[in-house]
Length: 577
Image (cartoon, rainbow, N blue to C red; front, side, top):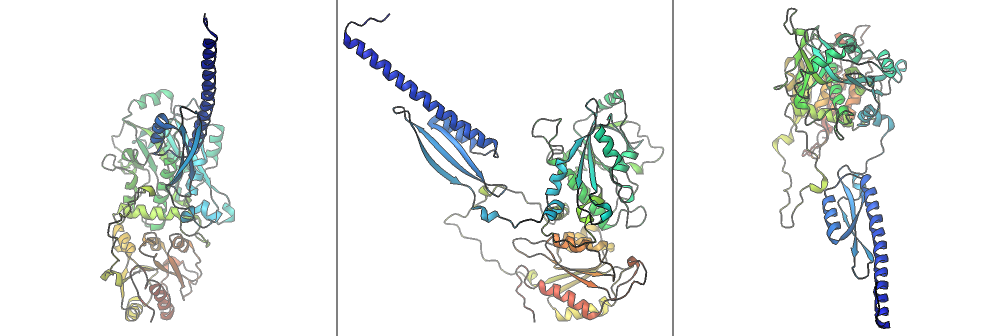
């Protein structure tokens, strides 16, 4: 018990207690400010992407006070506007002063603004198509099943009233055993009510392609639990398989050789895997997707279930596979007495979208206003990457872009090269049907005489390998052809870049054929498109079998217009005379 000898001692003790109470009260108020600041910072962080500055913020908070991190997203995928607010602490007054120190990492949003996007174009031909698929997924095996089956659906606008609102689908199965001898995938998957409905209403696509025929002919969902347990012991690490069934339409029997049909299939396969790459895997740790473009490609194997030949386009399937580690499996080529008795276990088996589901196949008989399609340009880049013509660029945050030092010399003004003065014109001339009458003996000499700066290549694409076809198209300034699958090479024409405008396309269409697929594709890639109607009537014949007749004046006018449009492409500086 305290005893005070004098009144002065009592007053001194009271003063000490009063000071302590004041300091303690100030401390509590300051702690409330700190907690409020951290709560605000945490809320902001939960709504924004992680930043490299987070570690710095925590360090500063521990040493100099508290830092709240106020970020504002700008309209660009790789930029953030970050404002750091430092709350400084005074040990004598226990007050907080706010000193904002903004650090802007991005330019004003107007630099990244894009024109308003048409709703139809956005949902049909942009990445929104992929996000729509990813968000419309259903797990259709019951929880007590050993296997699982996730199906993705999308509803795109049809150009035909009878198919209005058709639903397209692809699926990804997990925990699957495969018998090469039986050409059968085995699963223990008891369908939910929703699954039964999905299976009952699966679309049928051209020439027995798509998930419906795959599941009917090559999947057994009723394998026993014991069978699956035994098969799972064969697991050799995480492996993915693609159940691939191609159509052979538009080509000779047994040959998947039609450029349009088969490239639509490759494209739809790519997009199926893109959807899986943005879809969280519910059976794996947080942040894992159903297909990792960096890790899973090495363990991805394509199992070919159709009976067609390899065909000229199959190299494109190598893009998402490591064929050295997992060669493609051609099961229909196995002899009847093959000895493939064993099973193989796959953690994942994908039944991709059919080629006939491709949005660009859906819009082939009606014109649309959609330009600058991300889907089309991405496929364009991927094909060029496969053949080494263009490398897919690595996207870096804009804040990491190199800048020019004060003393550095800026890049020199570009010098025109000899190749820049020439205009490459590629004319596709079929050798069997749909030939262009009078092409080489009349039309080409007239073009060369009028436009001496052009180099004309007349080619039948069927006479050269596909890689050479792609390369020839890639170096074309003007591309001319009769309506048909060869016009698919529009996909590989050089698109607009920072150093060049896009290309120019001339399509000659048989009279009465108002197909707009190639017109729409050219526009989606940013090319200028011109069309010429043939002069001769079909008289009831199939246009595939009839040569085209075009007047010299009409042909020279159309091709000349495309050439003149290329006079100012890149470093060229030509004039119309």
